[in-house]
Length: 248
Image 1 (tube, rainbow, N blue to C red):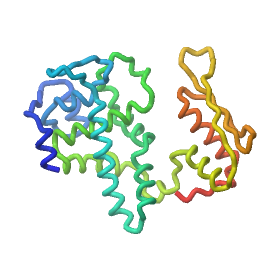
Image 2 (cartoon, rainbow, N blue to C red):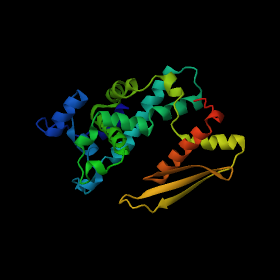
Image 3 (cartoon, rainbow, N blue to C red):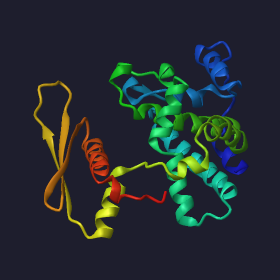
Image 4 (cartoon, rainbow, N blue to C red):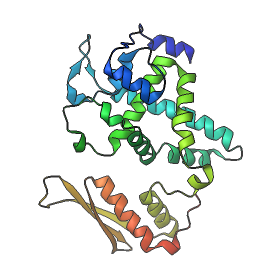
């Protein structure tokens, strides 16, 4: 890991008098060594910033890196915390811990969006912006401080704040997956009939009719097809709750 860190490490530029440096020092409880990584982590592509090589500056590349590091640290944590868990169990538990819902909640608690540079109004972003910035921040910390420092940050600020393993085992992260799994096991037919809703709002909405054994069991509406289908599956879950006995 130190080899990879040395490849990415740039000349230190802390900019101790900068506003971002000061705010991050308070928020993270440590002083950044190279503020450049954090400037990138808190820059949305709409800011239209370009680096000295002509590349667009945004948090997206750091988000990719942070996602991988978070997954690695979480996998290691679960491997030691659940010595009897098989591969399938560990994979499902990792998905629960690093779920977009959890990351969005943590990113919102840290108020990361307040540091975001963007030409888009903050209230125009969806919930996922919080998790995206959190992952980008993890990527920035890794490049700035190295893997082991980043690992401790994740343990202290993410893993210890989540529910304990026993509670997570019973948490449903995808009602759609659970519903489809149930239909397949019970040989029931289903269909998500999604379409763009012609409402009067300025925001585009999608609606979905969920068919179960050729009858509509649930309807839902949301700002994306994925959200509408998940909401419909959740309503179907409660309609058929006695038939569902999730083991995780």
